[in-house]
Length: 147
Image 1 (cartoon, rainbow, N blue to C red):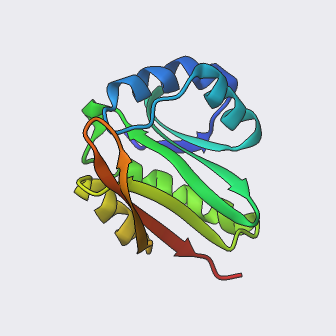
Image 2: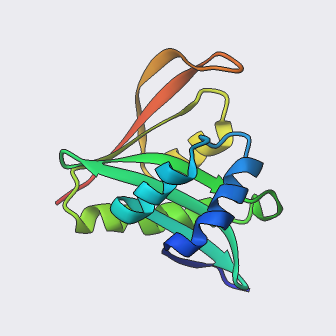
Image 3: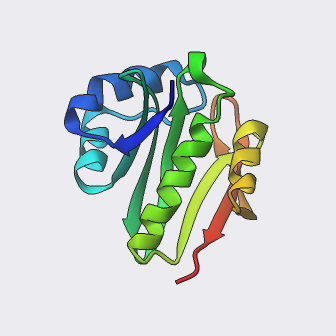
């Protein structure tokens, strides 16, 4: 079955929270934080056969977007869902005249780093010991968008 990418709605919140809790590499936020992102930010979800199987969320500010979280359900990993989410997010940022999309990722998260690099993101820096449990550097990535 094909995966459908669409904008999240508040009714998706239970599925988003459940998926995020099952994704150890995802940032863990409260329901209120996700509600705010759905209401004022950009949250795209991936669905297959009516089941939410992944999401990406970002925030816009000062002409740039920052990816806050990307998560895919364990049963759907390695099927290109995160790639499809990113391919849908980038045109949204361009349509909003963003100059760049920014993100940070754990240094050891090679799968995510490969995904971002495949989409054209370039490593631009690091934050030493940014992550806890375990302590690890954050690698900073930027995708510059052409007007």
